[in-house]
Amino acid sequence: MSINTMKAVQQHEFGSPDVLRYEDAPVPELQSGQVLVRVHAASLNPPDFYLRQGYRTLPKEWWPNPTFPIILGTDVSGVVEAVADDVTGFRAGDEVFSMVRFPEDLMKGSGAYAEYVCVAASELALKPAGIDHVHAAGAPMSLLTAWQFLIELGHDAPNPFQSFPHAPVPLEGKTILINGAGGGVGHLAVQLAKWRGARVIAVASSKDENLMRDLGADEFIDYTRTPAEDVARDVDLVIDAVGGANMERFLRVLKRGGALFLVNPLGFAGHEEAGKLGITVSSTQVRSNGAQLAQAGRLLDDGSVRVVVDSVYPLADAARAHERAARGGTQGKLVLKAI
Image (cartoon, rainbow, N blue to C red; front, side, top):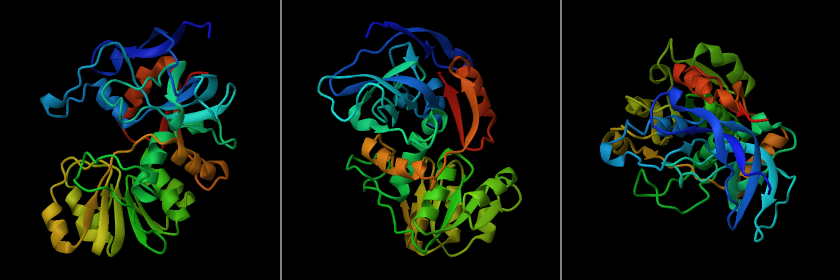
């Protein structure tokens, strides 16, 4: 292609949202097996915030040392600009969406906050025709996370969080409690669980109750008023999409033989107690998967599942979007619009 430069959100150091700069950058070079995508929209995800800050919450020996500048972002929706000679299945003009190079580029940025990004064809799927680019961009990481936790893992890569592979459990006729149901992963997990025939208890703040009911939740717990562990009992599965301190509290809501799935398991200290109760505690790291995204995308296309967008910012205002994320309380996804 004749275009050599593009606009992108780059950072030249770790730090606060102020380190994000909207500036000129070289268009990435198309490699074997890749597709060059003209980005229409990209969404924000927690790994973006962690990398922007340099993963300073991790032990120092794990801190990344990337070559600056880096471009954050994994989730994109856009239009195919060009394809490598060895790529079949996609052609220029196709509308597509993807989670780009995750977790492979976890510590160096996957390049989605830009006007163009190169994506492995295996990580790409046709955008559902029934939704726009903003909502498609909001889907990949959150939807694949919910899918790989609840429906199908879809890979045999080593699990960085535990010695055994994560395995979804049957959901039909079961009761599932979803903590953080108003967030990016949580609101999609609610819908996938309902699609699979589960009874869903959604845990979120009061502002999310109407949305949760609209998405199909059978019961709602406002955690700001009532701790979920004080009222929920005999649950088959808990998926905690929040993490943080005292995740062990969810063990008391589960029936013997139940399961606790932790999207962010760091800090969980209840394995011994879980073993005594016969509860399986499991986690996994989401991985890019174009085939799964295409499968889940059919649910977006027919309306069985929908992506809730909290707010949309121009790509140039990525720093402001990160500031919004830091304030918390988002409902669904934050999206950057490039076109």
